[in-house]
Image (tube, rainbow, N blue to C red; front, side):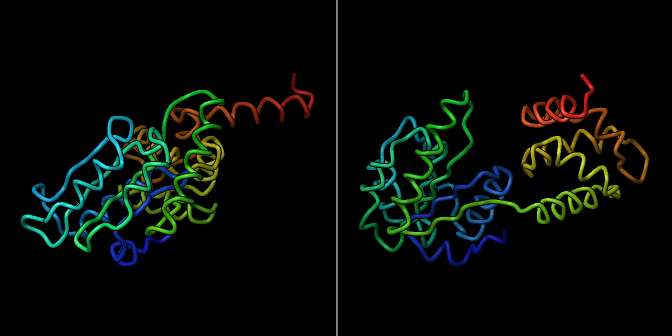
Length: 220
């Protein structure tokens, strides 16, 4: 799960992909900080409102105050991977950061977006660096534990596992719900299962799992 920031910066095109939105955004922050560019040498685009030639043109401009000129493209999945062709032959001072942000939509749209994400990953690998942010169960537990400790509290292991289960195993969803759980726990030193069950909003996958589990156990 550690993000190889230095290796990413050695490329001229970087794609931040994967299912974990929280880790992806953390990676973007780390990359921007390590690039040491200021607002004069950085421009942000929306993938749905711009083209590859726009990103290449911005990043290819000579930097003003920094060593590199950075173009950040958010909501990349709104753009077709054909735009990757415009990112070939960038100068050494250029850095294009493509961020495959999560997008809202029904199951049909999510299936289509998965293919778009895969197409982008295939298109960028020959051109630069691709980081796919995922989190194993063990890594997710460690991240949640660290987040609670940063708030000056302890996390009951059963509460941690219950939160991950309710969030369908997604670390990003769990971290989003954890903030509410911590606040709800008040002055108590330990976040408990009851806190999680009281305020955490379960994912659709968890609701389906509980329904099937109840039917199989005869709890109609």
